[in-house]
Length: 296
Image (cartoon, rainbow, N blue to C red; front, side):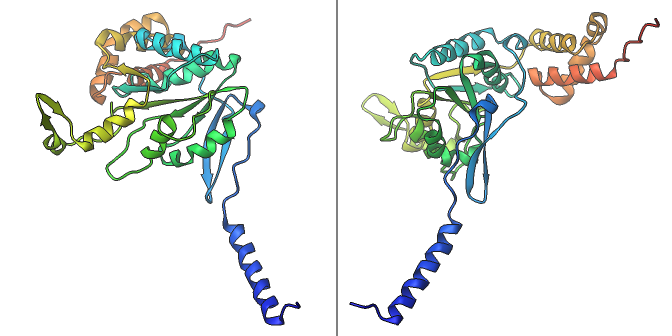
């Protein structure tokens, strides 16, 4: 049976419309050049996501991190198991700002990259793309840490559901070569309000939290390893300052004479932390006169 000219025109128009619609759809993510870098960053533009190689990862080493020996030991043991192909846990690092949480994750990359570890940094807003990222990583010989820095969610945000699903809750098992390491100033990653205490109820002699609290706690519970960081003591702060000042070439005599100034620097910023110590060490190093060259 021959199609009528009218039907042919309708089919042609429908095909043209479909072609224009397909052109607006985001392309599937393309695999990066895995040999080009040890760290990658998930980027988005025009609805399309891809892994961008980080050409110059932060060079921080485990030996640079002072006063957090217990935290270093715990995350190093977990990462070593993971790189060796043994069971290991997703990690949540929480606590005081500037205490070394994200630096410790970066140090893991530098410590274990020769053994096949790779790091992928994903912003909170892009967590909805985790499934696409996992598709790119599945079956690869490398071991991947998906790194979410300064992670927290406000009331009404829903991106945390994608994270919960990947951590533990999806019908699909996560790839064996992927772990998630996240840092946060909040233990439960979400804001907690006094009014939520009113949801607490009594069952027999037990006190049980309300549904809102349970929902918030269930996210952090999906991380198998919790590592806590605490405010620095004065001695800890000075130890970190002294380390970085020496690394930046400041003479020991100048470092010793600058301790009071270092403490005032922290006081002025309301934060006695590793980050503050590093910032003052840079300030002090920048004030030093370059060494005079000897005449031949």
